[in-house]
Length: 281
Ligand SMILES: [Zn+2]
Image (cartoon, rainbow, N blue to C red; front, side, top):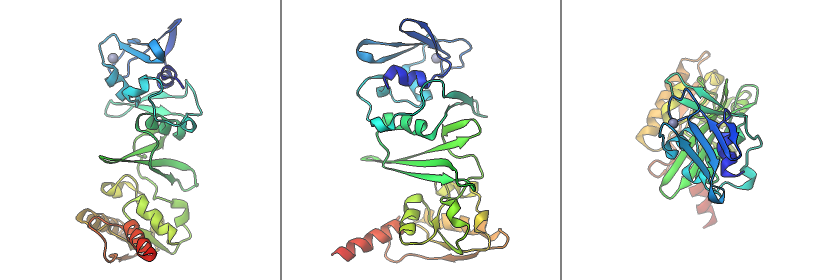
């Protein structure tokens, strides 16, 4: 996909108005006309020009693109990450707060757009609805400056870069139904460490502050083992979850397990990783 094709795929209302020129409503300002001109420049770069003087950076921000997506050969996206869908598959949705949200026909397309500016993600975790369909992804990039986590979610209008509509499903929801005992961690990475041990393990989506936005009802009547991270936020998360669970009918049996010898901020993943490395020594 060339930079021009990428920009056009993010602007479904773009119309070709010349040999090498397209126009579209500018996503960076409240555009009543088609103020944005798009063209292919020297060497295959994409040119964005808003007649209301929005900067290319502001326009890229609204489209979910990075500035380097405007230039050929600078994207770190792999060929396999190319969206399956081409132009005309996206639309602009307006949020309640007036902000436009780009929507995509498929999760793969939204993820490919993010990976074009960030490179391939380090990890991704799927969320399923009760029918077993994927309705959200949590994507993680590990960078030298720290981690970046972004959700890609299915909404009534299509896939967005943003959180799942509430109430959100628990991680690995379909696996929880038949389990009598379910372990709860603070994040997907620790939950996967639990699953690798054969424990049915879940967590809520979109971070420790978002426990209340998740539907925990699937855990009613079960034995639920909370595995808090070794920090204050981890304790608060476990307490919040315990309060939510206590209101379910039938109430689950709630247990806290403080994993021994955790490093500060450590979790089940660290607990397992430490023991694996000790076993090797
Ligand atoms: Zn503009």
